[in-house]
Length: 122
Image (cartoon, rainbow, N blue to C red; front, side):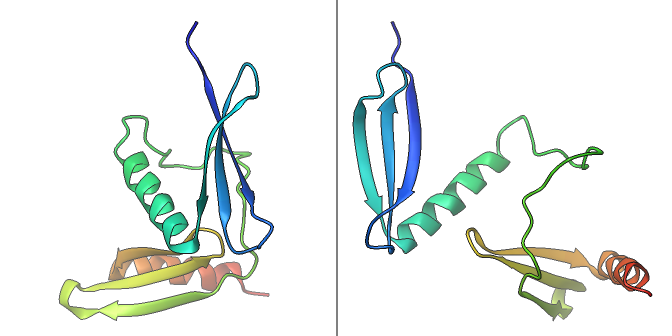
């Protein structure tokens, strides 16, 4: 019989690190664990995201009607012009993932700005 592994995580009692645990799915036996500090956690998140982007079953390009997303209320955001590529950087801060940045052609940034202006009219 093949052993199936379940992975779980938890914040350590010190509140400053996370433990990643691997259990036998059938027995619940703890097989291994590792305690991770913030820089290691960030590196794993970034590495997983890079690998996920390479998988053939890509993240959907459109939101299906009724899709539920975990949202960040009033996120911190920053923008920056990038003249050498005639584009704009839009960065949003996710408290668990970090800064997520998109480099957008100016036409796309303008369309987004126009949409946001219309969406916020009273």
